[in-house]
Image (cartoon, rainbow, N blue to C red; front, top):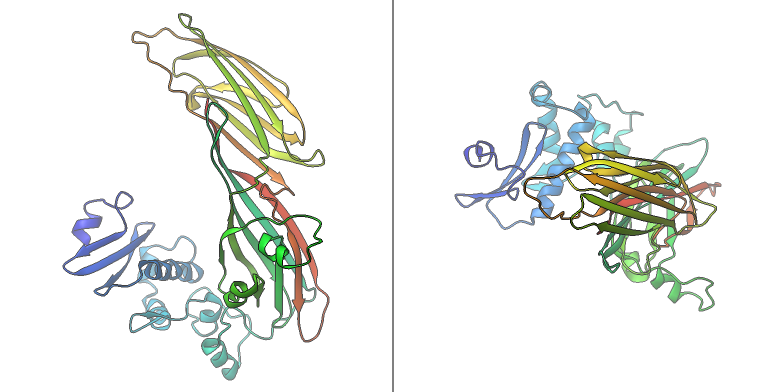
Length: 395
């Protein structure tokens, strides 16, 4: 392993699995350290890598985000304790930081409350290791963030080559006791099962992955998302949508190269497709230009646009882009003469943006119900943010 991977500098260029003398080495890297798992049997590699990632996450919680080789050497007793608790006979065990910190306390983590021995035993061996009992909050609140990334690749003729939305639901729960939550999105399958007199059609949600607190049996049976949440911030689920996507921006480029003349003309029209009550922020449109560009004369309706030689592009930045607005950019580019003229390969236009309170997929939160024995009132806050993933338009 040392000679074939580390010395050969294979990291990042080859798959992180190496077969040496009938033994499989699966490894990942943190700073200048390698975390390696060895096996002679045919194990699930996803399980091994998940354990390695959880191990690094635990060490970050105890030793700091940027722990290094020296901090590992100075805390070998802690490392042995964590190894003993997180793995037995080659099988991953308890990898929940909140539970580990209740009884392994040699690092920077300090337990909030000293648990009773009986409570600690049930916490370690119980089915709900992500939440401890006895949590109290003055205000019971749940914050929900629906974050989406739009991935688009448009051909030079305007046909869609790739169009999908990847989303995640982030939650921050501040709830007393051990409440059970029921979470609902406008999932097409759920809405079709309910009353036929629904006002709006649902969204076809694909490739759902959940936090381990979600009861997958109930989701498979009736598509309901039921869970006992961890305390604080966590990612509830991820999803993907590929149909009926409402693209936030429509971009229409027109490029003219004058043969025999060292000039290129670019016209760009940008249309915001979202509601006029909303606005986009941090809009950056990167318009590529030929490498031998000498200067560019640019006119644009609003925002700031200038030619940046280091980017080989015109960078058009708009701090606040209103919904339903249209804007234009025209650029006349003068080119330097070259000894060997080469054709311009025309890289795609790249777009960055962020649109608060808008989802390109149409996904929205229908309800969040919190059930607890005491029946307390819960305040719920929902926020939507859509940003650009790979948003490209070929010219």
